[in-house]
Length: 294
Image (cartoon, rainbow, N blue to C red):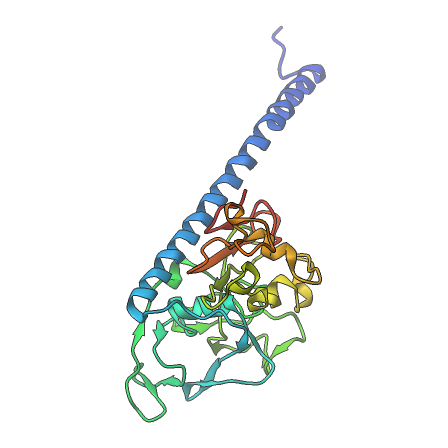
């Protein structure tokens, strides 16, 4: 008489073999996935670098990264710009705005502008304002201004976001979480972890600086590296009295030790870009930057 099926012992053996194989294979798969994500972030950093160089070629300068008051766009018949007090506008915000505009429709050569009913960008007296896209926002992950939510464009209204990604009961500058609005000063996500977005930080070199700590200013992105927002606290450089950890992180060791007159940061004449890496914390060894992070 033929035996049908497996015995309990045989079934347990098969399960044990499968579990062993999974234990061997899963770490390898995880490593490959991590490597693929890192490669994608490096490609994004490279694309941003190319966009910044194109911007420099066209405009004659690199975008500012200085901490400022945000320009916020919203809908009142037209897309109008205002500068409400107390809204931080960081280097990371400047980066996105210079690459594809605050409304994702292209960098505007003037800051005081609106988009009329025909879709033409004009200044306050009706003169046409030039728009140029140095990056395609469709190839970037766009974050809300807080940097804690990846947003989606409204397909029916390019340049309009379907939500602010706010938590229940929250509002941002008077807008509730269910408001469909125009741009709110976006950021570029590094795309490393879908459930933990992190903005790519941008710092422009100050050519007037003579010492390492004068060329780049951590305050340009203090809202993310500090951090001001509760959702981001503890996710940045550990602040010391003189922000030494940041300046050591960007220091080109070949130029000297921090504090020496010869010491200079990497990319002392241009800009630096920093993505937080797998751990989601800026200033660690797994960060992906446009300079060596050894």
